[in-house]
Amino acid sequence: MRKIEAIIRHFKLEDVKSALSEQGVQGMTITEVRGFGRQKGHTEMYRGAEYQVDFVPKIKIEVVVGADDCQRVVDTIVRSAQTGQVGDGKIFVADLAETVRIRTGESGKSAI
Amino acid sequence: MKMRNSIHLIAFVWLMLITIGSSWTSTLATPAMAAEETVASTADAAQAIRQEPIDSGDNAWMMISCALVLFMTAPGLAMFYGGLVRKKNVVGVMMQCIFMMGLMTVLWALWGYSLAFGGDGAWIGNFDHLLMRGVQSQWVAGQPVVPVSGSIPTLTFMLFQGMFIIITPALICGAFAERMKFSTMVVFMILWATLVYCPLCHWVWGGGILAFGGEHSAVSAGGALDFAGGTVVHISSGVSALICALLIGRRLGYGSEPMPPHNLTYTTLGAAMLWVGWFGFNAGSQLAADGIAANAFAVTHFGAAAGAIAWAGMEWITRGKPSVLGTCSGLVAGLVCVTPAAGFVQPIAGLVMGLAAGVVCFFACTAIKNKFGYDDSLDAFGVHGVGGTLGAILTGVFATRAVNDVADGSPLGLIEGGTIIAGQIAAVAITWVLAIAATFIILKALDATIGLRVSQEEEIEGLDLSQHGEEGYIFI
Image (cartoon, rainbow over all chains, first blue to last red; front, side, top):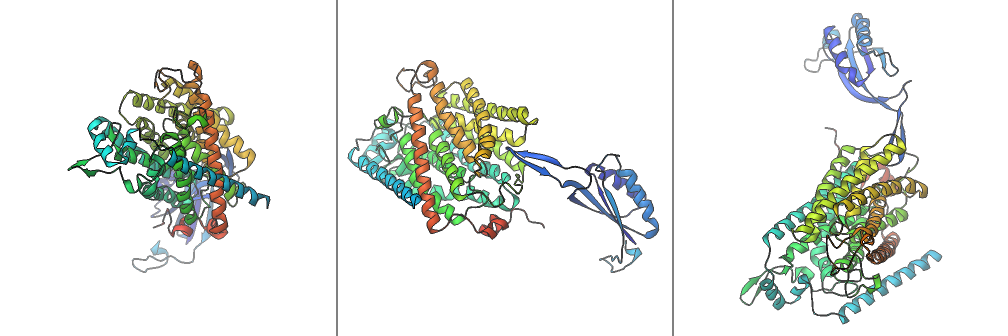
């Protein structure tokens, strides 16, 4: 099993979600996150007080898939989340030790 | 040591002022003249109801105005200020507003109204109306009598004025937001309302030393025109706010940590509510639903509109983008500025005053604040102190007898050749002195006894948890 974490732009969420659904991905978890990479932040100004905001808001998608499906899913995310501009995000893939479905208690790949 | 001496000196002068004031009040007491004061004795009250019947239109408008002005403190100011602080202090600052509604109303009912509107002494009211005596209905000579002020029940007048003593201290909360101990704030506000607001309210509206053309106003070059509280509400709260910011000191991390507003949507809606509530504040201050009230309504509306455009425009020019917060700040600055003028100037003058306030307060809240480095956290001084002072002076420029003939046909503002601006400036100066001296003394006394600030740990944790054991936003 693999856990795929993709940091993407807000407005790409719907595209990524439908592309993954088409690939047979059954579920996912999303979080609103903030962070920075090469994309520069921006400045905000409140009544003359200027702040540099480095942490840019992004969406994090977490998807768990079988090892065989991993590359296909990663490619799908890259294709659907790409704009070609700095700030498109990152994908992190990690080995996953275990998955348990709480309702039934079953574990392993069938619990995904 | 030098500091301590100066405190003693100021305290002494202040006490002298009050003592002299009180003795003058008792020695110079003359038969009550204004309608709200005729109810000092029950016989007068019985006469008052026969002489001046209640006008149902006026009373209806005034009771609606009361509700509008209350609405300004919360939700209006509570949301305006609540959005500007950091998340950990949001209910703390809203609490200060909503708690003022309770605290100041009790104070007003017990002694505040009487100190502000009892008798016609020069320096302070008297105790005639303690516990609503002479204000509430009474049984006289075999019939119930409703005390009347002008064309409305004295109760309506008392309520309307009572809404002003709620919002005035609440405005000060912007200066010490995010760091003042709640218990100390409660004591401070009781003392401030009693020693600053009530005397000042009496000076301007109760026939005291700042009343326009009043018998005691030689001290202030003939007194000031203050339609709805430029001096009483905005200069008093704004200047006191500056003293608070200076004496309490900056927030931890001010200047090094980012402290952006945590929810500008609250702030925007709060500002819009202030705009609406201000119609009651200004147009209600005519105490009747007549032509001058309509004039005040128009001036209020135009002032807010011009202020919003002016501040946003200044940002657009100097920084490339107009901001939401700037637009909100500008509309409030415009409203503050036209407050003393609403019933005395033409609507187009209101437009000019709003524009001026937008520009001047923009500089006060950005350039001036940054230059001096004081942490007036939510710009209570920059908007209310500066805007109020500007408004009081510009009233002396634009006031016209065509709108409100208060001087028996004599010209009023500079533009029509009048000289009331001398009284306006004198009143501004006197109000500044009172607000600075009294706030300084009260805060120094409280600092020496119960302490002004929360501990460092409590400040870092946030006032919501440390002062109230609550959070604004709960993750469930």
